[in-house]
Image 1 (tube, rainbow, N blue to C red):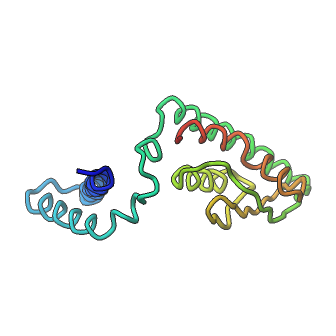
Image 2: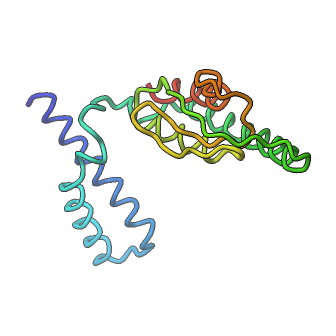
Length: 170
């Protein structure tokens, strides 16, 4: 069996398992009918969508399975960034020192999953909100903007989180 076929089967199985897990989690019903219906629905949905759920170009398990210690480091940095930026936003609002701007920059992350997590992490951090993610290009609304230079803005908004994510998903 060639590697493309094996990867397609693996993507189908992983998609089915994920969908079935979500089914069981949301229905919270362990009755036989519910479990069998959920399994059938998961298999059918996975057959139609596995190529979207796990794209073929990400044909490496490391693209979507994180390194555990790097993921824990990222989560720690995320919580730290959350508190730091919350303090900065409250201080800026009280003093009236806001400078809202829309900035554009690129990310060096290769995995679609890592890029999506970065975009969501930026949005989750107070004072920033990701408006668009297009391949490796992000558009972000930044409440406390200190520069409109693309590279400097990108470094200020994403640096720590991007480096941590770069080690999480290779």
